[in-house]
Image (cartoon, rainbow, N blue to C red):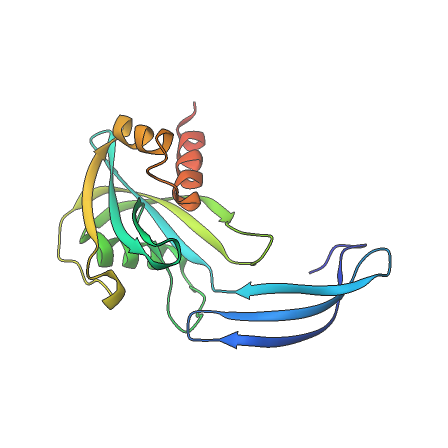
Length: 183
């Protein structure tokens, strides 16, 4: 829903599409009446899970093709075919088990955030997973080189400070966790 006085869409066309995303180009009219184009990436929302125990977190590391390097982050993902999750907690549990093999006895919803609201409407649901039990992973083909490791909270913070963890979703989710933990 557009806010009063916001950019007004005039026409739209899909310029690229696959099972995970589409890119569209919208003809728009600005508040002053001038016209232009706006590119939008449409992707379904995803879930991000903070698997926490023993004053630390389980992270996964994988090669991220768009940035050309391996990175550590909290487990996260969505469904193919741009399908939105009817139950975000179910998706969070699925991603946790798929990527780490861990199952959560308790899941606490921490919030919902938008990642790149200047180019996409995609957002993500953040969950804290506790009472963890190990199990088998069921990783997707793109995740076959994924690694998993436990980091203490202090190690995690050092990785963020040192620029090793650069995933904005992971850092934002940690901020939600800190707010959740406040008295």
